[in-house]
Figure 1 (cartoon, rainbow, N blue to C red):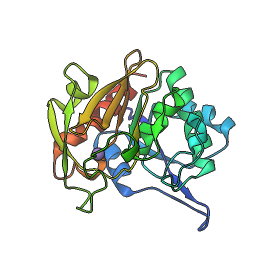
Figure 2: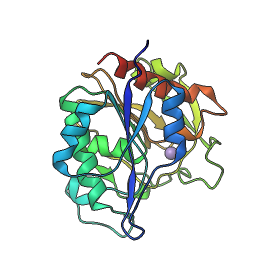
Figure 3: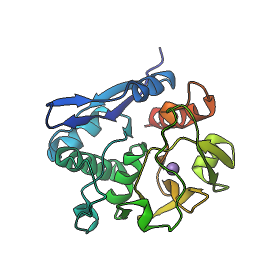
Figure 4: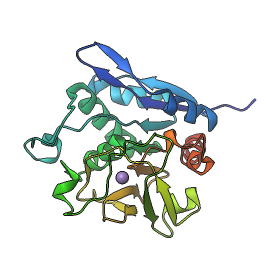
Amino acid sequence: MTVLPVIGITAAFDEEEERYSLSRYYVEAVARAGGIPLIVPPLSFEMAAAVLEKIQGLLLSGGGDLDPAYFGEEPLPYTKGINPRRDIFELALARAALVRQVPVLGICRGMQVLNVAAGGTIYQDLILGTAHPLKHYQEAPRWYGTHDIEIQPGSKLHSVLGVRRLRVNSFHHQAVRQIAPGFKISALARDGVVEGIELGNHPFVVGVQFHPEGMWEREPVFLGLFTALVKAAKKR
Ligand code: MN
C-alpha cells in the first residue's frame, strides 16, 4: 500500500458572509498529482504549528492583498481585500514550514506570503515597480496564458517545468519587490515583474505569481509544480 502525503491547502475567509472558501482547482490539482488535499481554514497563530504536524506539504493559495504593515508600510489606495485572520495564520504557517523544512508551494498571494514571511517586501501595485507594466490582470479565461515568463536556468522551477520560457495566466496587481534573504528569483516577465521565487537551502520552497492550478487541465506542463510538491512531501 502506498501512503499518499497530505497536502494542506489554505482557504480564504469571507468576513461578511462568514464563510470559508477555496477554488476546486487547487484541490483537484493536488489530488491529480497524487496528494491528499486537506483544506485548512485560517485558524489561530498557535494552531499553525499544530497543523504542520498533520501535513507533509503545504500549498499557500491565491487571494487578496497582505496587510502592508507586515512589510513595514502604511496602506496605499491600491491595496485591497485585507483579511487579518488569513494574514496572521498564513504568515505563521509559512514561517513554521520554513523552519521545519516542510515543502511549500506558494501560488499568487501564496508566493507573496512566502516572501513577506521570510522578510521580503511587496509592491502595493505593479505601477510602483515599473513605469510600463504588461497587463497582469487578464480578463481572458483562467486556463489561457496571456504573457510570457523567462525561467532562470538551473532553478528548481526550471527543473520542474523543463522549459526556459512559458506563457502563463496572470491575475495579480501586486508583485514581489525585495526578495527575502535566502530566496532567489526563478522567473521574470518581460517587464521585469517577478513571476517566480524559490529558497535554495530547503527541500522544496517554490513560489509562482501565476496560477498553474487553472491551466494544467489543458496544458499538462503546469501539473509539474503539484507533482513536485507531492514528491517532496513524500520524502518527509
Ligand atoms: Mn503576471
